[in-house]
Length: 367
Image 1 (cartoon, rainbow, N blue to C red):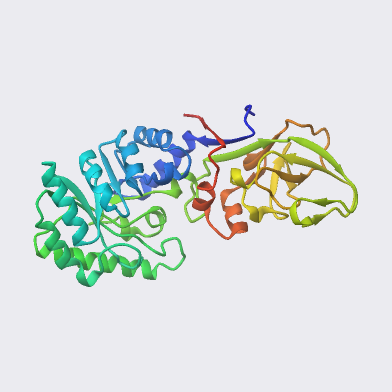
Image 2: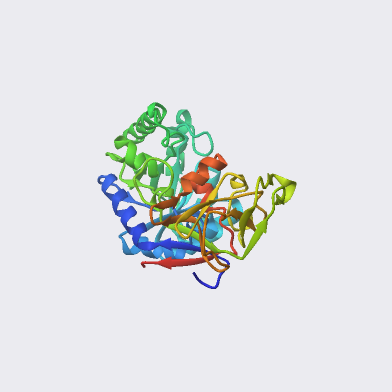
């Protein structure tokens, strides 16, 4: 254990192994790792450097700030979502691949490209069924033909986003592909072609072969790279650990934590951990979750607070303040996964990773 109260360890070797597995599943598609929100809170510089070493030459981000950070590592960085009007100038200047889903945005980018005497690569987004961003199928061919005639723009990518790829039934995902291919057919007839076509994020890469077959030639792995809780057999790359801060003896009838949600039924020995929901422990783990101490599971008792969590260690001998506590990760045959936390919280791994607080120290191992 380090001298930090809570440490978040990221296994870079396991990340490389997961990325290699995804590459094998992606058939002939290039991979464009999605490193939004500082690589899901794991640190885009380290994660991006590892993936670049593994062969990735193109990254995706959600915002301009994220894209500018990634642009320091590779030349090709695409913003997947909205580009705000006040961001256009800087995005054009930095050579970012700009996402476009309407003619007005395309015109703003075109005007700025002319002002800066630049050619700007754009990625045109289709709404094939996500209902969030993108050009609707019935308008797509006409809109894209208009966009393609604007000066200063280079048609880099045509892409869309699945809404149900992580679910067992792929009927709607197949319908989304059909819609995409119909639009591409219309654009081909009009002589409008893109360098890249992409629809698949992590789950689709593994589950939906059509999403990585021609004409698709790019895919966007995200949470799957870190061992998420969906369908891929990728191993978890993260471990969250703390230490025992103090050991307390509890008498029968003592209450533990806010709102007295746990009352001791008998004498109990408890460990106070200097980690709480500000460090990423879901509040939903209160009275339901567990940790690993000395190779044994220990239940969380009482309500998790912002800075502390209390666990029952009555069944353990020779436990002392300073002993390591595994919150997420594996020791021996015992393991706590992001997926388990997600089920208790009624969410998924992406939400768990993005909740690990910024006061938690990041450590990179096997890199």
